[in-house]
Image 1 (cartoon, rainbow, N blue to C red):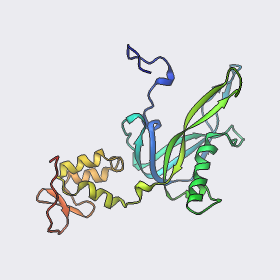
Image 2: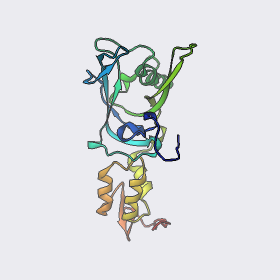
Image 3: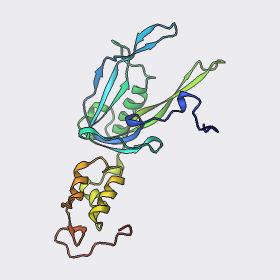
Image 4: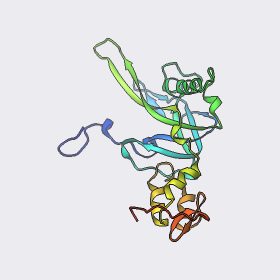
Length: 235
């Protein structure tokens, strides 16, 4: 909530940043890993108790499609995206009301069912290119009582990657064709799907061929083509 002095009033108003601000990401799903948490929580009696085990979620050859609240896109080291999902207490399994089950697991089952593969889940997507999106899930505590409370958390869901049906080379070609190397580099940096790909950026900055196009008369055109490139309104 905006205040006259521009200062937040509670911790819940703080902006989410870094990898926690990633809303939508795509990449090759790696096998999940359950890891014991190194953190502790405080129970109602004020005692320190171990935090839940976590699941390590990793995507290879990943790129970020969308951020929360227009936050800047973080750099992906080695094109790998990693996040941690709360799972269950040590030695236990998650309940059906957990975020892991309601979001991650259920969405994978719905995705596979929509693809004509009922009974399949997230394990069947390991090694495949997937798209994950953080979506809100609500939990209601003390329902019907005076102290009823609803809490919301952003949880990973599998979604259909319709926007990725086009091959990457074809996608890149549409961004750079008809542009000068300088404007091509700018276009790649502004696009959510290509902004993390250093190989593309370095290629256009060096005026090297890319996605079947090469610099002809100062602009990227089809290699060996005779048709003039379209005029770039920003050049």
